[in-house]
Image 1 (tube, rainbow, N blue to C red):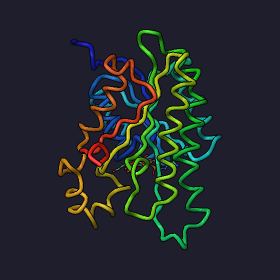
Image 2 (cartoon, protein in one colour):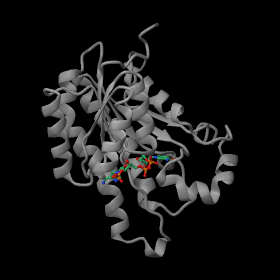
Image 3 (cartoon, rainbow, N blue to C red):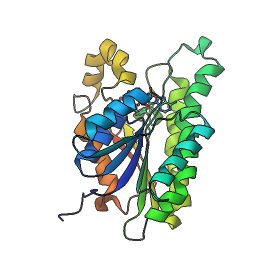
Image 4 (cartoon, rainbow, N blue to C red):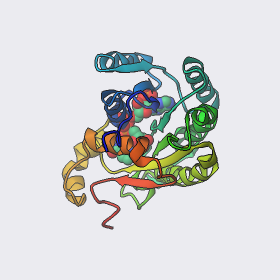
Length: 257
Ligand SMILES: NC(=O)c1ccc[n+]([C@@H]2O[C@H](COP(=O)([O-])OP(=O)(O)OC[C@H]3O[C@@H](n4cnc5c(N)ncnc54)[C@H](OP(=O)(O)O)[C@@H]3O)[C@@H](O)[C@H]2O)c1
């Protein structure tokens, strides 16, 4: 039992690890003894986070704009070069949203969201698949976690058409890649968060925070330990036999529908 949730010594890449849910996972992993690469567009923020988390353990900043295939390739190549072709854990967390009334919901509102939330997840996973396969074994598979959303599982109240479609796509791509990568000893799962405090959620929580809390069966917003704990479960020995799953971490929003 002692090592059931142990991820010490594992090497992880957390996209969007500079703030919000990505930072919750990156911090939890560093505190649990993993070596963590954090990536997002803003180099200065990644550097600050890496410096702060390096006081606890090992954290390295690798900035990239994951909305383009070329940048996904560059980031994957950089990790592969630094880690001698091996990577234990990929957390595809970087994501963007867009809310606009239907009449104004133009192509830009689709491209900005799908390029990062769907295509970015796909390209980074395929470019890192050889490194994950090199690290994974029958007993200890490598892991991919894609961060989806409860908005990809139910009908959201806000007008975020491309976002909810992108998250449903992430959930299904998780199942498809889980089947494809299982022979390589790589598990692929998704976490579907409910409401967590972050920059993306700040305006929504400011405007509707009380109503949102009232709608969550557990009557609270998610805490960093809720997110880090779910990710550590899926990446540890405890989660070795789970693949193709979409795990809601949402205080009961989906489970009690
Ligand atoms: N918070 C919630 O309640 C909630 C609920 C359900 C699902 N989610 C999902 O959780 C994930 C994290 O969201 P969050 O709420 O933590 O949002 P957030 O605070 O806005 O964080 C988004 C992260 O992604 C990075 N990012 C944005 N565009 C990028 C790009 N083109 N390339 C690389 N990195 C990029 C951001 O850093 P830079 O700006 O420096 O690039 C930041 O680190 C998303 O996939 C989101 O859909 C969140």
